[in-house]
Length: 450
Image (cartoon, rainbow, N blue to C red):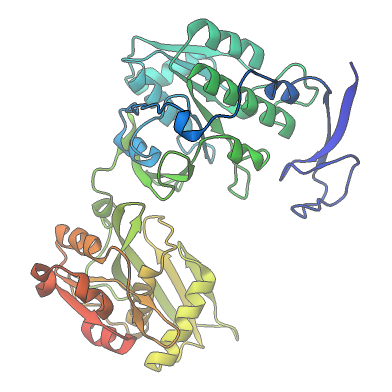
């Protein structure tokens, strides 16, 4: 049987019949690798003919599948309420962030009632056992196997018929028929195709652990994320204890939900009150510190916006941001200068979202502006203050979504004064009016906050 040879970009998966110095899809240089496979094998077999026929939507019987709880509430939240049977879930993250720990804890919880197969390609089963003992995992139906051959893995799944399978990691597994090495684009794509077929034909839920590139993207072709049902990213600073599980694709739930964990000696522990956790190190009456409330999925989170201004020693002052878009910050600085008459053209400005949270919604705009003002004037905002609002180019404060939910979260944690846009006042419960102040522009917000 002849071999089909082609060149594939290792960054984006673009295929070419000949080698190219620069990828026309992603513009990466020297990223093409030669791969070969049998023409009539693998992917072509995935699309083999069957006896299905087109059916009317009304003729198809509805299948009510109850979600299975993972035993980890934060993971259930991110997945949309639990694990959907027969789904294919991909979880990625930096090395050492806790992906394998999370999957081992998941397998231990599920293994108490369901048959679970944990396939490790990076560690021996004794090493996994040592980690399981440290995490105090004891399950009656939790099977371990060390295997890299996808054909053998398929046989194990067929023999055991587990309800759940965990593959750690997809980059270490290979298909013998392919000449390319494990972890290459061709191997990763074909292994994922096999797993997709297994999950849909047998109803086994499969979790794939994936590595990430230096840019923070999942290693392998971009099509990998399109093939699976759910894509989760495990984020966090390696030298800090908190971890954030974020959903970027979910066919069965919201893609905006996050789960917050803390890494301890006995494994990953759920954070019951994320807002309290994110504000735990905050100092009171500190210039440049403003608290706001952001919405992640359906969950309100109180976060601290920090700003620092100081005289610049350069002709062009520095602007540096962490957790907020740089261009957005530059725009807000310009609005602040124009609306309140500040001269910041000779000031270095640093903005940070404490706790490692990345804020993308505009409801934090007003907090960023007031934090910069507070640091520049060396004046602390009044105690117990939370600020909400989007800032327009003319200095107006625009309405935000879920204002009442954000207010309740702030009051629950002991904050007594919440500045919101005036446009939101008509939607607020009357019993909250004693704690709420409406503002329509930056001038009014500055007067109320300081």
